[in-house]
Amino acid sequence: MGLLVNPFPFLVFRMKHINPWLILLPALIIVGFNSFIPLFYCIYLSTLRYYIGIGEPTFIGYDNFRKIVFDPGLWNSVARGFMFSFVCLAIEIPLGLGVALLLQRETRGTKLIRTMLTTPLLIPPMTIGCMWLLLVRPDIGPLPRLLSRIGVMYNIGSSPLLAFWTTVVLDTWHWTPFVILVLIAGLATLPPEPYESAMVDGASTWRIFRYITLPGLKYHLAVVILIRLMDTLRIFDEIWVLIAEGPGKATNYLSVNIVKTALSELNMGYGAAISLFFVYIVIILSWLIMLFLRERK
Amino acid sequence: MSQASRIFKIFAVGLVLLFILFPIYWLLITSFKQRLEVLTKVSFWPEEPTFYNYYRPFFEDVYAKNVLNSFLVALGEVALCVPPALLAAYAFSRLKFKGDNHLLFWLLTNRMAPAAAFLIPYFSMYTFLKLYDTLIGLILINSIANLPFAVWLLKGFIDGIPKEIEEAALIDGYTFWGLLRRILLPLLTPGLVTASFFIFIFAWNEMLFASMLAASGGAAPLTHALLHYLSELWVNWGEIAAITLLAMVPALVFAYVIQRYIVRGLTFGAVR
Image (cartoon, rainbow over all chains, first blue to last red):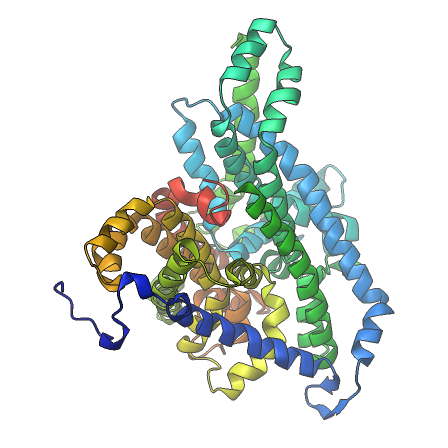
């Protein structure tokens, strides 16, 4: 039937007899190839003491995992990673909510503004790193040079605190538009009736926000918080381009830490162990997201 | 709305837009500045505008190959991910089978997993398979995130199609392929287009795998080339700005097209 010739005549089946596994197979093979082989190889590597180019790999059992527990560098990295996530969320969510409330009504400029907000979400993350490099590098950036004229030292290469906050501002630049757009979508789903009756009752703007808008946005806020949490935890490209691990390892977030361990120290065994640890954190978090999305139905 | 709150609104939105646009503006003017001007002055408009910075990335063949590689990887990624994802999304959306929810969750985990965590095993694995520094290797490795993404997105679109249409097709004695081609594909066009654009952008934007699994020679995409240039000792920042802009082109072109679906895409269909 049809104009096209079916390239797989043996796969012709009536609707009643579709085997779900058969049509899942191509996707499962591709993802499984990229998922299971590396996972098992990672588990294998994590039991070795293995520096690339230095000696032979030797089996050391779970020593790498024991090292994780007592490695201040790693826990420092975990703490900084979560601190980064927390600070970013604490800034982006209220800011995004505020702007979403301002933009929710359709006016002439809204569509243009939304297109503008879409742009940072689509450009390569690494180019955002480049962009901020041009702004904040001590030798070429306008920010440090203008600030130095009024006597303020702004050098992300020497101050851990400044490095941290610069990455936070960068992430705010990158992802606040996402928060804004999701929350605008959320605001559009709110029914108008409660607002009308609140107006009739003469409720204050704050109380309307607190008791009608905020509860109505619960789902959208949760989605955006969970997704932002995952994305901030695994942030890599922008940070790597901007300052890598930063002064005093101030921006040695989880992904940066893994790449540093593998690339600079060539410590494959321990790097693999950290990777498994990181994946473990991610699995727990995406499990939460999944529960949430299922709840919705 | 009162006059005061209107002014406040314009002021606040203007401030946010300024914050978003200024870095882009700075990037743009830097790309037109002379090498010396970038190093010596803070100028908000190029004193002697020059196109020199665009010469190398656009007209000399240094970056042409990288752009071509990026393009091929992104296109290959769409071709590799969308058809299997469509089939899988149909299964997840319409068919009941044991463990379907767990499997869907497992796919999401792959999308959410940090690319850096897979880096160490990937390096050995792709070297062993002789896929290091090949376009095929880059296409294959990017699918770990993009295929699950496409499944989730397309599942949302298929969920939105009324089941009755398929039941009618069933009565008419359609085969699965007939149903797919004649009924689902036309209805799913927006979904497939959205998924394709997103995957193209994601593959084009990817940096970590591109920089670790490609040497500067053969299959290096643009992100790799830019990172490589940044690590050089003497950098012409105007040129960096020009290449950065070049890397942003697909996003700028597609921004308007997928604007409608951006929220849906970036939340894996959780928010319509």
